[in-house]
Structures are given as C-alpha cells and as structure tokens.
Image 1 (cartoon, rainbow, N blue to C red):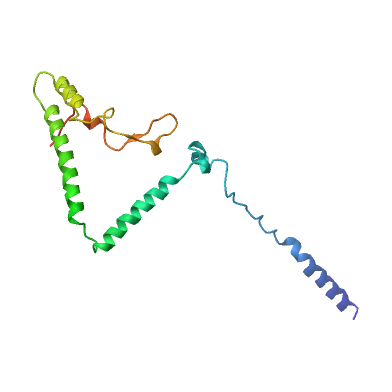
Image 2 (image 1 turned 90 degrees about the horizontal axis):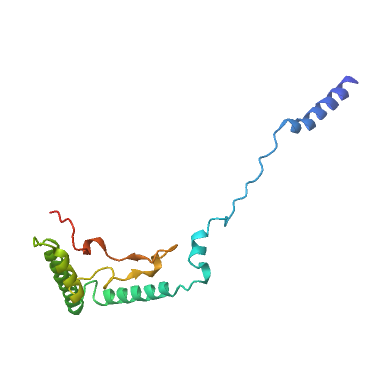
Length: 159
C-alpha cells in the first residue's frame, strides 16, 4: 500500500508543475494618447494659444440662419430673395464684362483687360479678391475664395 501514496505524491507534483508548461500571457500594449507628431499641425498655427473667436462667430451666424428659417417655415423671405437676385446680377454683370474681354478678337485684349481692371469692372487677385487668412501655412499668404486664373486676360473657354 506504500505504492499508492508515492503515486499520489508524484501525480500531485506533476499537476503543480504543469503550469510551467503553459506560456506566459502576452504583455499588455500601451497606446500613446498624444504621440510626438499628433499635434504637429496645431503647433504650426499657434496651437491652443490661438484664439478661436471665429468659431464662435460662425456658430452665431449659423444660429441666426436657423432662427430665420424656423420663423419663415423653411422658406426665404422676399427681402432675402431680392438680396440674392441683386448679388447674382452683380456677379453676372462682372462675368459678362470679363468674358467679353477674354473672347475679344481684337489685336490684343491685354490693353482692354487692363483698362477694365483699372476701372473696377473686373476684379483680380490683386484688386478685390481677399485671401483666406485661415488657410495660410508655412510662408503661403493663403488661398483665394475664387479661382484667380479665370480672371486673367486670356483664358480658354470651352462650351
């Protein structure tokens, strides 16, 4: 009967040491919340120190638009419609003058373009268009809201 306790002892030792054959759990990975380059673009344009007043202004304007829409049931008023018509007519008039100069078959339309530009009939990048200050990065003065190349004296019109 001595053999039974030695077998039980051997079996207990094997069961206790069986955990030695099981692999260790993998190490927990830590994810960096703010890495080295994560906020690089924020640092270029001033980061957190830059005033975000423009966001508040845009939000205020958006709220005003929503209030006007709710008051009118989603439709624009006659005053708004008239303002839109006037704006479109002004832009259309300027575009027609520019296209007339660009499509002219005269000797040289550069002189006509310069005259129209100096009189204010045509707006160019240097006389009327404003650069977007928020788009200025690394030496660039910013982007134009409109295409400046379409305002030049010669442009290829198709269609």
